[in-house]
Length: 143
Image (cartoon, rainbow, N blue to C red; front, side, top):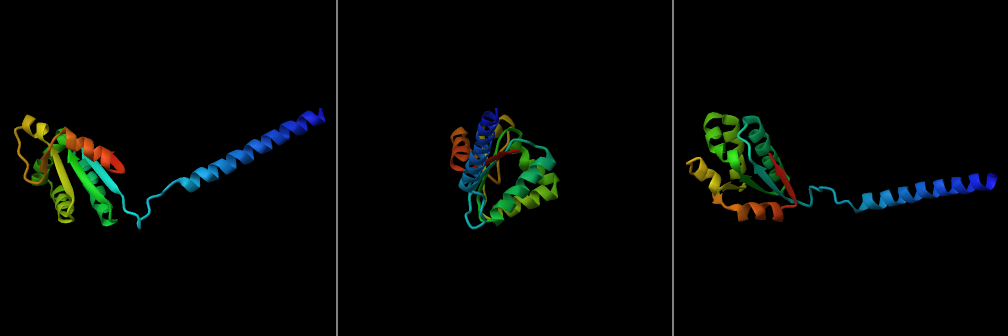
């Protein structure tokens, strides 16, 4: 009986040590966002909610300040950003800051057509550009 308990104890202790060593190995392999190693970020805005758009643009500007390459893609209701810029000074300020830092803004051609709108601030893009935005960037966020 003591022998069985001792064997079970050793197995339990061994599995905990193995799990701990494995967890440390995985943790050391994770590449954290190092400010000295800029990344690329794609931000897809498909909302026309003022607060949501404002926060997405704030994040885009913050990311650019850390040296990251940022592409903003306006999709669906997101193409209405230009109208929001006319009525909301905070969004206009954030968008202007993003553009002044050489940020890239792409907008869905079909979405503009569906709203009978033209864009003054972004390059009109297609589904292939959306695909490339999602594929080429290390981080992709949607708002």
